[in-house]
Image 1 (cartoon, rainbow, N blue to C red):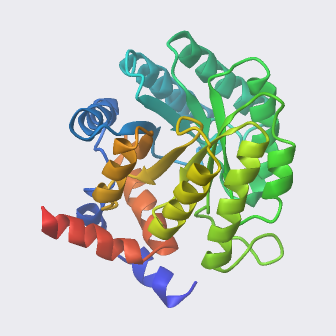
Image 2: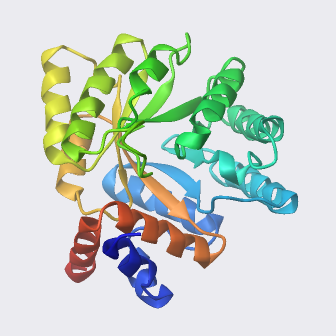
Length: 298
């Protein structure tokens, strides 16, 4: 572990909690729903609500997580601006693929009844194949199901081409997981160039790209190119993390009549919020300065 990650890992939880305030909706489902309502009402922003917590191993904990998602679905009824994100390691993949897929399908089926979209997050490279297999199997039956792909991985263009014959919502992002040079790009500029190329590839294959980045030059590059190509503004959207101060740019996108969606995480246990923020800071320490600026601005 390098010095940067060592320092972040040693940050005391109370300090992390100060940094986390803009990033985390709060504790419990009600906090996540309230934040989704707030950003829609005040700013015209959509939300994807997420329960923090990964690497769940005990079956009783997996079952408890499934029940949280069922309650979340009930709580988000009647909110077309809100979707839900979830992770395989929350839902039993550490026990078996079949068990995880069954849990995923139960959640997607329950959400479909209420017209709520579910996004299956992509974790590190060890889970890429199994995540795509489960996604494709469930996507065969349900249309309210999308996936995440990471531009840093060399395999991503092939994964796009093999994704699904049905159009899908696909969050395309650089990805937060550190991956070795033999499977992934190491230079951020290269990752951003690939992300742009993959947005175009997704559109070419009939999918709906959810362009997840805070990088303003990259966003403007996408906007300029897609406008010049006459791509409909409802054929894609942009996504950012809650708490990153990009309000002017977000409002510009909203004024264009496009969807600007924030990732809105909440925690049932504060330790998961601390872990989430430490991982975000390790991936991009510059965010610490952005968040501190946001706090001071308040």
